[in-house]
Length: 228
Image (cartoon, rainbow, N blue to C red; front, side):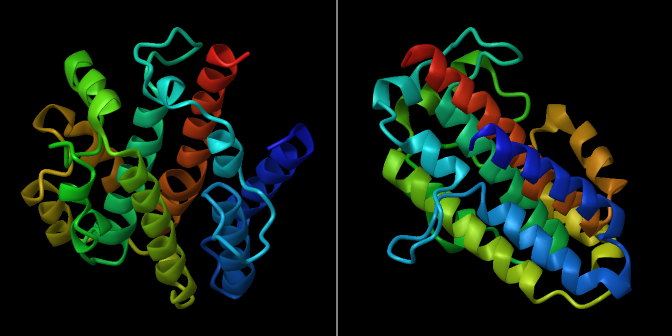
């Protein structure tokens, strides 16, 4: 994602934040959401899409670079693997449990097993030992497929929304599901409080779009540092 594309993305996100909860602007808002989201995740093979931010990150990315941890970059010591996994986990949790009240892709796609690591939470509050283990052991092919399936599910959910639904909040039962599925570590309950103050629109503006953008930025800085 070059500077011009980055600036366009930020302008569109700013516009989205102004209209996302207006029922009369629902169709426009969803179109912008899908544009922003699609530009972040890996493009679908064989459909002629323009290269995305994630495409650029994976392009000529060495496995040793992706797994390297810790990395000394501004604002983060985490590996590229962790950034990609964490942002997908956050989106899976918020879009599927708190948004659509559906089964997480982590389970419906058998990724809790396929990823090859025991972590089913969001990644917030992980110990250095666990981040190192995740970075070293996760199945890269499964991680790529998990991100793709999370993205597909999110777009399916958002495309089916009716006007007014973006202004709704998750129910107590949905937050209880987060706890029951151990999607957030016991030490990170602040995250549930933070999500509790958000409408579905708030989850779209952060976990499904801006949060991914931020972590792709951090991952790209790692790649540029290690593969100069």
